[in-house]
Length: 136
Ligand SMILES: [Fe+2]
Ligand SMILES: [Fe+2]
Image (cartoon, rainbow, N blue to C red; front, side):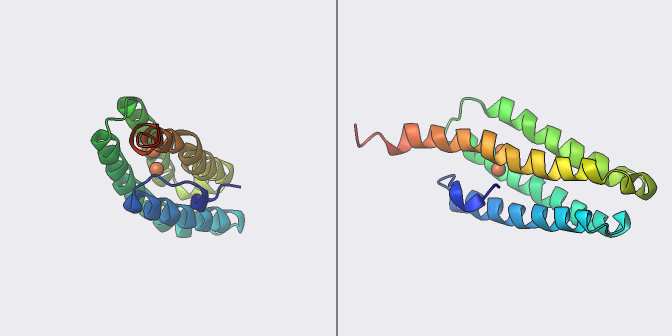
């Protein structure tokens, strides 16, 4: 299971956002698996969308600052996640009830796996280029 405590981005704001994102995503998957009506789920998804938009733009700013070489590729992955969440939000409540699997996969796969798989590459790049230099 993903644990945001295990990954540091070497940036306090991003680390705090990853933790907040994790809590919110956990809350959504919990509500989702408790068969909470989709109408009640939507405000949480909207909150997630808003929060992710802010986090992604802060993370993109960080990548820019450290000259991360895969910035545009990473930005595309962010856009893809935003689009997936937007798609769920605009889906009609009736259909949304049948979409709990989709919600689960978007929140878990995209949010958590993105952080583990992709954000960790930014952290690694930072470590290799900004942390280990004095040691060599
Ligand atoms: Fe992130
Ligand atoms: Fe990211």
